[in-house]
Image 1 (tube, rainbow, N blue to C red):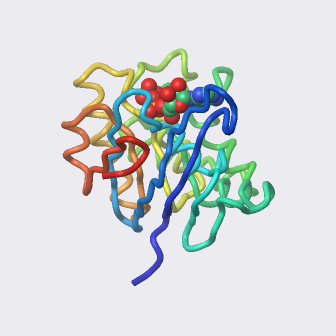
Image 2 (image 1 turned 120 degrees about the vertical axis):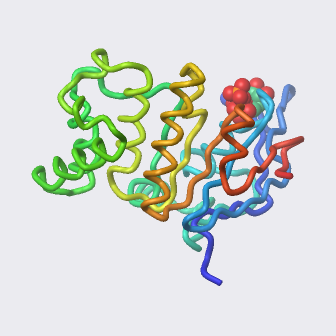
Length: 225
Ligand SMILES: Nc1ncnc2c1ncn2[C@@H]1O[C@H](COP(=O)(O)OP(=O)(O)OP(=O)(O)O)[C@@H](O)[C@H]1O
């Protein structure tokens, strides 16, 4: 069998480690997400969902255990290697879009591609294609302030997929939207993800959305069940 795109193995993480007030968040967390698989991460508030996503996304390091991206151990790799793997392989969507306010929707999707070395014409074509596939091609020239909340999140999804990552990590990607908009953005996200065959780990409090993914993982007492 081929390597999962993301594998966490017995990951431990505490804040204020070894000090009074130590918070043990992850206590042997293990999971694997294969290419083409969309996995829901459900956790009560404060259970360590963001901590887990930051470690999976190579934004933070575990105290112990392994983090493998496409088979390569990254948990203890150098900062340079982790940054390179993050740029090449991982796309993020956050609860709030974090789009750059002074740039249009297209430009927000073009910029990460330019940073990764793509040429402008190709980057613009890809941005427009992604926006079309998310159903907001007509908003390509709008700045974030001139987009609805749902449209902003659609642009954020396009930006996360701009460099064709192998892994999509999302932290409550529809958490700040009303239920109907949340459903529509989620449908569009699923369709786009299904078309690319990437691996996705999507944290949500919404059990109905979770049930529509391939598998649901619950984070409880620092482990996945
Ligand atoms: N920098 C930090 N220093 C100390 N404790 C922290 C730090 N960051 C997070 N924590 C604690 O670790 C636990 C897990 O935090 P985390 O942000 O991962 O939770 P979460 O599951 O994402 O929560 P929510 O769903 O409310 O966003 C919480 O109890 C939090 O208070």
